[in-house]
Image (cartoon, rainbow, N blue to C red; front, side):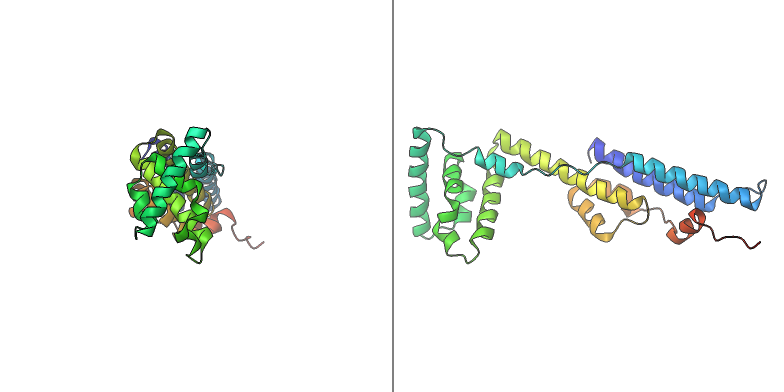
Length: 223
């Protein structure tokens, strides 16, 4: 769990504890009306604190596409290398090797050749879903670059992972401002931030949302 997501998890738990405290608040030295106002103030403060701690959703950016595009040939030598690698790839495919297997064993030069001509490779054209298969293979090529230690790919993967965590927490804390976090969003956090999920939801503080709504919007008293 990063320090950032640790902060988000702490903000969620702090809010739940504060809301639970508001529900349980009682002071016999105060009138019933004064106790109700204090509970409402406590709820308002808890919601405001969580709102302030909620991160903005990250801007959309296709870093994978940027990394793969940077492998396009720029010089005559680049073109010659990619042409040779493309011929080898086609020969391997013709010998029965799958593109996935070729990508998983490829070096950067071969990956660049595959990415540059991916839409016209026989396995893609014969798939019946050339767009989808091409996208899957590009993703596989990107993962291979990360595995090879390509600095730009590794940085992009790390930034994408951070964006995924921020997006999930932004949605979770936004939902928590007015109610419970939905199961889909909890699952999203579990997928990208296991430690943050455990800190927030494995031992969650129960909060009666209906009771909170009654505190925030009490029924009018009879004259």
